[in-house]
Length: 319
Ligand code: NAP
Image (tube, rainbow, N blue to C red; front, side, top):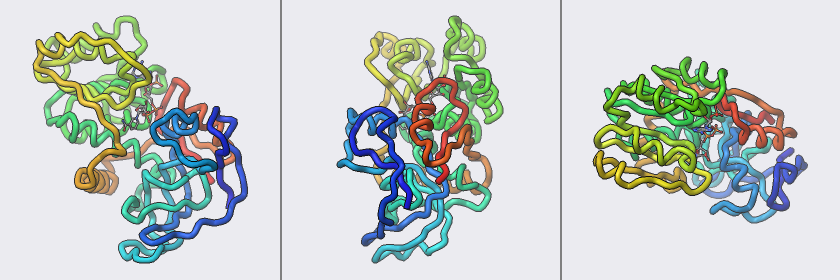
């Protein structure tokens, strides 16, 4: 089968298309015929070699995928060959076939395409965990989705809107702003605008926002704290460096900052996330948005794109 292989950590040029033997599922595993693989910023951090997860070389990148179960390993009884599924934990989804633990695979409802399915895993699981399990967001609260135009952001907007929050989403391009609005934000603001704080106050009111889901904390966290309402919560989803904050902004509001790492989610919480996403995908409140698609050989181009500004939904690879 064809797969993207990495033989040394480095830039996008280390992603090579190769022909490799077809994997065989071991006990407790399924083999997935990949119809689409989802790209995430973490794929690029891992490829660079400086991330907490450092796979043994050579490896096939990619965690998110959607497709059809091709074969079952010993002891797997909850899936059948031919089932449509998605995962956020493939052992290399930039390939025609990928192994996954049977427990890491979820049903893909008929109304959701494979490309959309590849956009579900990490983005929607992260969004749900940030919003409801880390921030305990409640209906009628105001949420600022700071970085709403990408994978996690669009998912957060859809989940928050469906749960009855007032949603303010940000983007850095005209296309991103239009998408954030179309996917359910009551207000869409440009996070690069010089007067962003004034624009936020105009739509959120003097009380501030109850919840901030933050995609770029190293740039925004210091300012976020001053925009919080009493007992406000910031969840740090993304950060690419250090940042200075004034703790008094927290003290004066009885406010808090929570971090999160999806890979550390306890299994019981993950089961709740999977059930909630299943319902939302089934009833159409969750509609994954694919902004760009690339053929498998163009994995390097796709990874460059995922780190470039101007996000408008997820980027997928199609084998
Ligand atoms: P993505 O699809 O590439 O989207 C990135 C988002 O950040 C876009 O909406 C982008 O907007 C926005 N952004 C850029 N500059 C910004 C700024 N100054 N202020 C606010 N937002 C800004 O990435 P993603 O998959 O949504 O992931 C978002 C971040 O969360 C990444 O850093 C990722 O590594 C991290 N993440 C963490 C976890 C976890 O477990 N903690 C899980 C998933 C993702 P424009 O392009 O429109 O400017």
